[in-house]
Length: 307
Image (cartoon, helix red, strand yellow):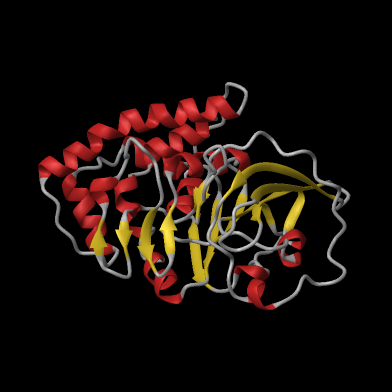
């Protein structure tokens, strides 16, 4: 995903106690080269990396964390959500740098000084980490939340949210990608993530009670009615809307009042890969829920293809 001015390219943390999984990952699990190789093997992505390269990746992480904090403060009135920062700190980004179509390891690129999307194969991408940080803070995740992501991609965005929320669901429409990525969560101990292959246009209706947040990490031409229906009262839908492969996409934030009324806010300019499946083949349905007129867009900021 991409933001304008530098579009967000996505394509795509109170002291509330951190969830148990986050505490375990940050305090009792040492992330070493051996742990990385073991997790990669367990996820079906056998690879090699020498100690020097692994250590160089880790050495770049503190600067990337400072970049993220500065970026969020500049766009959220001086506040970088501590929960978002803790989640980024807990997550080993190099684990998600992998091209599933070419079976190639891109870990050496993690925490790059000029953040950008990286190819995953099958037309999907791991979004740049600044755009993912922005999207995560826009979601306003809380430890009790149940969240749905449309567009699993690399699994990074779902993993990131899972370090904050109670339960994370994710749907990927590309079968070979979604089938492979579903194996990456367990080796890290992320047992509160559930993913499946399917068409995100329809959401995940089997989840009783709906979702506190739905985050869409691909560009829709209009809001899928099922997603608005599956937001809990008081919840939100974060979705890029615009034409496929064109500039002029914007991130929209839809919120649902306690009485079920839906409101929208136009946020930053973005650039995402398109939502495929039913979205590409069905005109905008009649009778979609009424939405308040969008507020003026915030100054354009960066984003990119997420996942």
